[in-house]
Image (cartoon, rainbow, N blue to C red; front, side, top):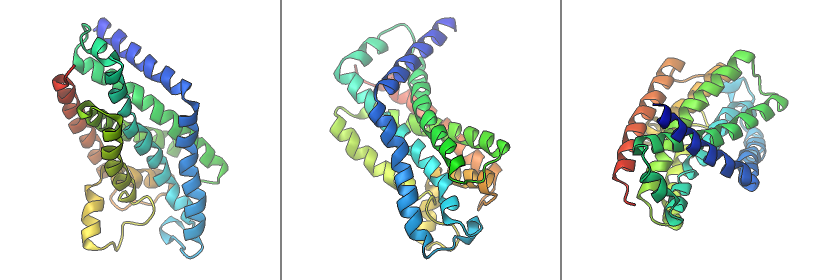
Length: 252
């Protein structure tokens, strides 16, 4: 157990150091959601009252942009698996004594740290943007984003484990990232959607994270906090199981 914990720490520390070294990625991951928030939020709020958020559309979409930060950062973390394959770092890790399950967990924890630092920083900025946070809602939001990050980092790592090139990973992940965000209800209420779209929205795990964040921050929810958390946690469990399987079958 002690050896496994040391291995997880070593993998986490490496991911954290890489994160600190790439300041441009940190800046873009935080300011892209802010760009969307001001440009998209300002434009839509000019003709939308967003009654679900008490008439403030910018407040209504802010939880969605917290989720957006997690989605983009967590998913693209899988690109590092592809890069590690190219430089043979992953081969050295996989032939080491710790099991591949331990390697997967270490990678997940490292990726989660990257995503959560950026999402928590965006939440801090939200305080100055007038988002009606309370101490309780901040703590609950941090927990919800933690749970979401675990599943999405696992998903990114799973995709990366099957990819042999960064170009291939970018194509596949883009086809997943944008639907995850755009179908999450981040930009619109879930009520009165077309039937076909309503089905897709409810198949998107990010929908339940956005709804949970809206519940704790704004008091607005379509499905209830307990149900939202149940779905996200179930999503995490399934992805972690698949991820450990994918790592166990990954070729050196």
